[in-house]
Length: 606
Image (cartoon, rainbow, N blue to C red):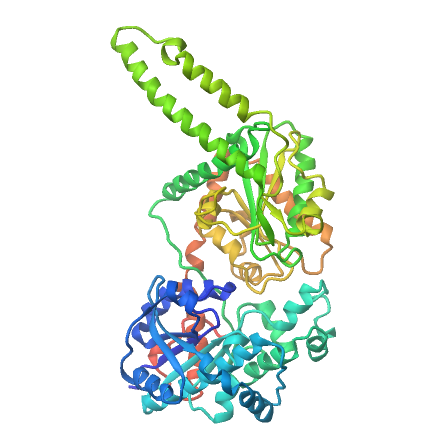
């Protein structure tokens, strides 16, 4: 039987969060370690500021240790250890800065051997090329030290895949897999508000790359796709981009997953939903109740989140659908309130003073009531122990009543609640704020739809929300992510595994995966909005209809919907989704080695 292969998985985001691939690798790590054990290594660039937090040095052994000594003799420093996340995968972090003195020579060989001209004013591309050459040297050294034992290299995105054409040019005799999560041309066109999918064949990728100033990066991405043994993408829509823009049809689609924590009984996650919702209630009370009040028992929380890409992420559709929902709810007399959150990162000067004051006053009011409650408990006991039912005067002395009246007077009668929690750098020209203002979604008392734009990602250290993002999502009633350009889309999946119904779109990788695999998705809280070849207004109305229908569901039916949504969580767990990765690696493996049961696929080839 052939020796079990070693797997080295390279990404620019190992031990450093820069985008969505960090979530892919981090959430996949436990399943990868379970399957591969100590034959699995993640490889990335060494960044001291993040390594101090996410990386733990541990000495390597065997062929890897010997190879590190070999490249160290060539002036390349490699840090071996473990990533401090679930699964604690082994990690190699390459300090490519030691090769910076050879940057000019490196660029020359990239042009000479691969016809890729690199500019002098693109530091990020320079760093990726230095990392790519260092990675190629390291993997070659490891392969030599393995003395014929099999090795597989898996590379993510162009930043982590510069080594692929280098290894191919050197004639490396081990398999390589390249996964692109989003093509550079696709991202550039969608960011420029170009109709990407309506006329995919009409775009000349070379011309687009030159026009958008990404020609060197595009050349590196294309070289990786062309040189890898197996080329893969994360979704069917990205596969279409890969075939047209990179000149190669992907052999497989590798959909993303999450590390799903399931509950033994449905009531457990329902109770957790209620607990998290209470935390959101506290913020909402502090933000709105000094101006006016509404019934929290008849309040629903909607959320959209992710990178600030106003059109690509469907934030424009979300706001327009909220406007339509507000119009409908104002015409009804049901008394339902919707608080709609927009969570994304935008440039801001600082937290809004009025927002901070409201939160501070709410906390002071809460603490005052807690103190008075304890005193009332003592008075209640004394009154009852003396054989009489207490009156209000027995429970509240004059000092307590005066104190409460002063607090209430300071608490109420404040101006209309703000729609943004921070002071933005460019408040007048911010796309989200301009859209909200144009649709008069300004948190007026008579509007059933309220809006909170939080231009920073949510963490437990936030002075106003003070809750982790996953807790916040769990406390919401609906996630809304009708993206125009979304190669995969983690945000709706993060809702679904927590039992929160979510809206995605048929232009997102996740949305198309749901359509292909779950015919009854809409009935079970995974709504896929139609955006492909339909008018913008049609998408808005479809999203607004789902929102409106949710506001009209009785509590019991909302609970049942959450149960049905959460039941899909197991399908998105990495324990299932890694089968696609194994199938792709097996295809690459068999181009160099005899078949092995260690890579037996349990997913269909696509």
